[in-house]
Length: 242
Image (cartoon, rainbow, N blue to C red):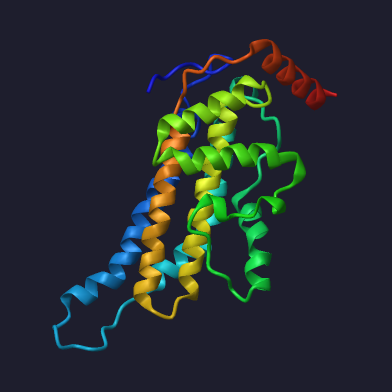
């Protein structure tokens, strides 16, 4: 994959998202360690032993703190770069706490419905209207990134060609979509009566966090309709200064 400067000759996305990516990799390690707290003791137990003491403490602590840790990492990345080297966004970014809360009421109404196993299971109708179009294209890109990266890139190209969003915006949204499902999966570990199922949720969350790292790191060499995009960015800057 070719790396390229963004619209305003910005640093590579993996640098602009460095704290976010580092937090995700830490989260991946912690999820694996949490699962190890369950599977490790089981592997050490005698073959005839029925009840094996395991610990879910790390899993519970991680599920309770993960949203805040990742939101703080995003804020730190934003603070590290001056305003003039940060790409303007067409719609405000939602925090992971907000994203997870959008799915929370549905689970409560359905009596603790299963957490989503894919990005497509997150209900789009709960997304604020001003961000729904970006959410939908970000979801499509995220869903296809692992199985068919070329098709995912084609989706990005189609959306960029309209001038509505930049490639960076779409990839950022796709990464956030992957993180949201990972967080919801991790949150679901607390509701498991079987420790092995809780460990499975931790490992499933790893898959989504790893996809998010790939999306947050990717730079795509895509031709952008500069006249549309720059006009939109100018309008956003004028609105901020007005």
